[in-house]
Length: 70
Image (cartoon, rainbow, N blue to C red; front, side, top):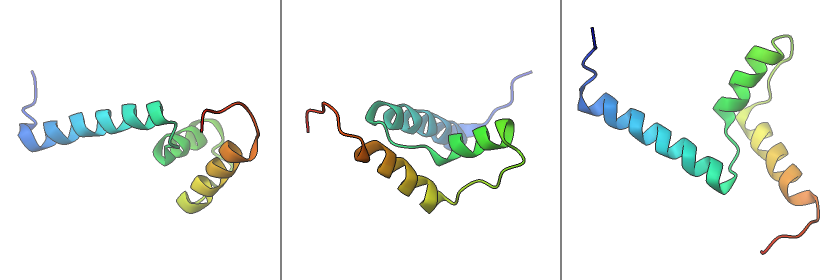
């Protein structure tokens, strides 16, 4: 039996998936994915706050020299 989720919930679901794909394409860090990983693989560790996570990811991304177009 299929549950009728309605247009608003269905639209939100589609938007969330599109958002996730766009974030992957542009290489933006995803805090929710990080939290899920921490809970599954490192439950004994306290996860970083969202601000700490974004700062760490941006620092790691832009502190290593390499060949980039921009």
